[in-house]
Amino acid sequence: MMLLDGVLALLLLLLAGRCVTAASLLQAIVAFIVLGLLLALSWVRLQAPDLALAEAAIGAGLLGVLLLGTWRHLPASGIHHEFPWPWHGMKQAVSALGGLALAVMLALALHETAPEPAAAGETALAQLDAAGVKQPVTAVLLNFRAYDTLLEMGVLLMALIGALIVRRPLQDGSRIAPATLLSPSLARLFLPPILLIGLYLVWAGAYSPGGAFQGGAVLAGAGVMLALTGLLRGASVDGLWLRGLLALGAIVFTTAGVLLVPVTGHFMAYPDGLVTPLMVLIEFSLAISIALSLLLLFTGTPGLARSRP
Amino acid sequence: MTLASITASVLIVVGTAFYIAGTVGLLRFPDIHSRLHALTKADNTGLGFLALGVALLSGSPRLAVLIALVWLLALIAASVACHLIARYALDGTDSDSEPRA
Amino acid sequence: MIVLVLDAACLALILLLGLGLVRVIAGPAAADRILAIQLSGTTTVGLLLLLAIRLEQPALIHAALVFVLFAALLALGFVYGTERKP
Image (cartoon, rainbow over all chains, first blue to last red):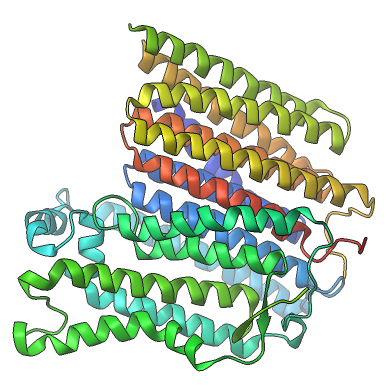
């Protein structure tokens, strides 16, 4: 296992270097996807199966498809914006300085880290019984630091709004379905297992690695597959229901937090008897919003529509 | 050392051998379609043997079903993926750096 | 004994992942690189299955499942919009 870790670390460095030095965009993307695979394995070795799952679903999977899709949409020329002289040099200088600063900060952080970093973790584990879920990571995400998770949901929605603002009209569902018969059949064959696994991961978050983010990403993958096989396309108009579903996670999370203030006396605190059903409700509504925003980030449109052949 | 674990060891070793063959094929074969051939056959059989070995070791029917599902989906995914890549390569306009407009 | 077999298989697979990088880096064509991703993906799935047993973390099988599902998506994403009309 030591050898395995050594090889893994070596390959990680190699691929990370490759990502920034690759000769073309596609080569960098390919290196990045393989880096995602290795990162997932590293999380496994670091005993963080939750992160391994997240990396598998988001890092290597969804992000890889997103990057490849973006690469496809780029025009044949004009990808490499060569900046005029002073800016070009400055870009490299800024990157070098940034890298150096990051390295120094990391070194300092490693140096400063106290030998007992587990205090918060132990407190969380001790309180696990009150959290309403058996899985410590989910308990921390949805209960102990619920406020952070709510803001993360907000960040994702922000990212989506940002992407919609800068989107190009080209991506407005203008791409047609691939002509091969196999890919729609793949979609039909794969859709039930993907949906099932996505929902299962959301549900499993309560007692084993999984949860809203991992499950949501897998559900988004189902949508991306429908979009890639032409069964679903981006539309420039969005319905009220879609906006509602996008906001659902944040709305349910906040409403539960606010409505229960008279009972518990604190924002985002949950009463004992209700805590488990609340966790599940919040988890599923978050997953729906996460899945939809990731899918819309992929199509780059504010709405979705069914394609008719 | 039980019979099950001996069988599992053999299966895992055979599976790994198929992985080795697949990777060597990917590196050594001269053109994309032969590489495809090396990859699809070898590493799906490899994953099959490996999955069988691991399922034997898992000792629980639930996990065994899950592992079987992994292999089944991998088979479907790999055949479609390789079909798509083969078609793409057949078009002959496969250049590296720039996408086709 | 079985631990030894599992460890050896894991080590072999990670070395194969490293070897496969030659195709990732050398190409020459875009399709070669995507092929290398497919192989790396299947190798990672194999590794995750082995590690699930070796480290006694059944949840890793879920991670393997997720990788399998996204492997097909990557190929779909790569060829998207490039195919001829029949």
